[in-house]
Length: 314
Image 1 (cartoon, rainbow, N blue to C red):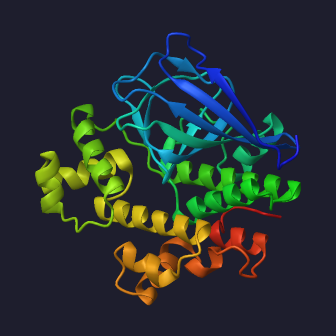
Image 2 (spheres, one colour; image 1 turned 135 degrees about the vertical axis):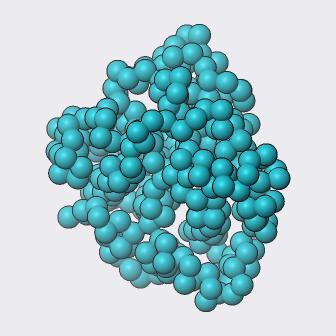
């Protein structure tokens, strides 16, 4: 399939009892590397029935949020700042704590390519290796790289070689992120999860508001100490870091997809000035926001290498 071919197919969940409705838009399939956008429409509520992954996939949420339940005590919170691993043959359940379902970029590598990347990048043999965290926060540079890849593919700007090299680099950076997250000696308590999810959803949906720990504490009914500790246990980062990343995520979307000025974007998302925004963006993304603007002169490989210095584009 050409890297610029777009094909949308509706298909049922692999469990006929599942309430999930899925559609898949094939983005490209080149040299055994396949990428697609998978959109899931599902009711808000508890986890559905058991599903089994029919192939290895590295999944990058693009819109919405969901939970992947590995068992009764281990749940992964997924949103556009994270990556989630799906290992072939491994059972799981999916829940949607917020309305709207989700859309994810799913990348599948050929078995030899994936095995080589796993060995080289993280020293394991499979996506189900217990040394890999099944879901993890991504560095913002990797999130921006995912945005750029989607943007270029959907506009028809990415060559087959660019598609393959960027997808492999993106998966490599994601694997390093899952290997870098400390594996808990025991999963965080589930009785706190709903309140942490509520806190995360407030920050995700209203990132520009003036949040304090006291206000968040009052909203979800956890003390500041427990909120900070449990938020990090479930989400992987602190509430402060999370809301800052959401704000930068939104600004990156605007920088890539609109022609608005950087000053307008900065002020709309709570930064005091263009320079404040640029400094915060460069510190966490790895490049200034202007670099992500299409047609700004820097080569594709140069930008992607700057965004994912641990990956390889060569």
